[in-house]
Length: 277
Ligand SMILES: [Zn+2]
Image (cartoon, rainbow, N blue to C red; front, side, top):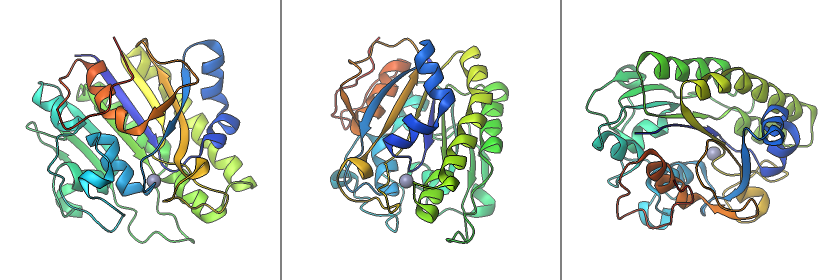
């Protein structure tokens, strides 16, 4: 089974990635990485996007129409299929992911950290952002999240790992995008990520760095259009990929990950995988 890490930076519009992530762009320039545009499902709301990213089905099928709608989904997803194929999965994410893909509701003591050999999330490390507001984001340091994922790679031997962080989405809702605060937040995220990414590559992982949706100039998303729906998709690996000008479909991410890892794609994932080989 090929190994892959999906790094999901919540709420980063396309222009921010291409303008402010100097390390990722440097690796595109040097040939280590390739970059595309990807378009989110509608609504371009976080919960709806998480469910679509991992099940490969649209909100009109999985039914997560907003962040207030949460339950354990009864569709196959990337975690369930990797485990079914004998792989080990890891998640370092917001608690919504544990609810959608393992169990609902999230019990902060039982579920903040678990190691469950049967999966579907074999090794889960979560945070809830309880109490978050415009005054206090309640997001963990991304360096700590990256370190935790690295530990799951090196100590637990995960085959598939998902890291999801809301730092930049919260910054966008709070400060919008044309400001020093966002310049600095993206700069720091890029530098922290760059401290870990070569180590993941040396350990044999393909790495995808992308977002769940964009944000418009007022920090909004949920609706349609380029700013809210489109984001950058960086890929470190040697899979055969579409031309750089092709707009990637968020619904094709789950079957692409499974196909790249050598795991069977369930019938519920109807979009054609864009990663080949
Ligand atoms: Zn989001």
